[in-house]
Image 1 (tube, protein in one colour):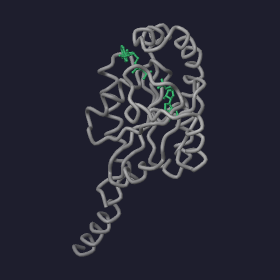
Image 2 (tube, protein in one colour; image 1 turned 120 degrees about the vertical axis):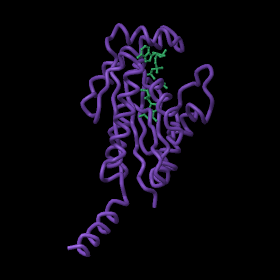
Image 3 (cartoon, protein in one colour; image 1 turned 135 degrees about the vertical axis):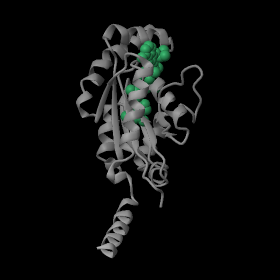
Length: 213
Ligand code: ADP
Ligand code: 5GP
């Protein structure tokens, strides 16, 4: 048995608030962290690779995966389907490694309500202002003006679900947000339920206590 159980770390934010940047920094900080590569029916962006950022599936392939019960959660976002494969998650957390999910609020709710929900840690990233959110989306320069407008419209829907999350971080200074994120992860790893060996340890303490009294 591993010393600790892994967490299902869920990061969500309106598009452009900095979630992917923070996810990359968290993975660089702890190379044992496993990123949950989602499946999606959206087209790959320049530089994205099948199996690295996403598994790019046709709508039929995606629906088949859902029908076969292979998705821990799934949702329709910006006119495309997205879902988190369930397969490796349970084994990974049993082996003591955390799994990082970049999903929207619909994914957060479904993961929280799943069998593994008690091991979930959800963090919502807010932008410092709407002007800055638009600026970040524009400087990322990965999407057309049309897609950016669509994402801005969707951002209030995403922000309005901030209250479902365990933690909320305003991503103003990137380095500071990264530090706060790491602090949260470090603390949450010590939740009682994340430490399967504690019960044995307390039993040992009890035996010692009885022997010495
Ligand atoms: P998301 O994954 O939430 O859509 P990204 O991580 O792609 O957002 O960030 C969008 C853009 O904003 C990127 O160009 C990123 O470098 C930049 N960015 C992220 N966080 C900050 C920050 N705290 N200050 C300034 N720019 C940021
Ligand atoms: P993007 O197209 O910018 O990569 O992602 C768009 C939105 O879909 C983001 O809010 C992202 O968090 C969300 N998303 C990505 N993968 C999944 C997933 O597997 N499930 C859910 N519910 N949302 C996802």
